[in-house]
Image (cartoon, rainbow, N blue to C red; front, side):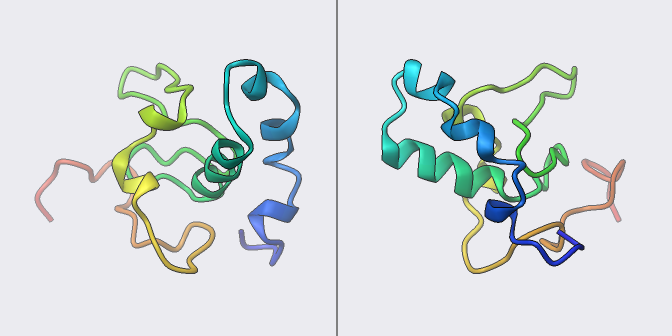
Length: 95
């Protein structure tokens, strides 16, 4: 995030611990993993911090297992929008 606040401290992920996901069977570990994944901007669909990924048609992928692999698989200490994500509208186009 450009304001210098770590995504986990921004308040944008607080909904993860509000209880709805726990009611769906998420464990404490699942909640931590979900927060880590959703603290990144998705390189595929550009879902923002705290947002679930979406399909091309705009349908919400409201599950940790449904998040785009590129978002789930990012490793390292990178936070925020600087993941080398392709510019909006360039996916699938030869550069």
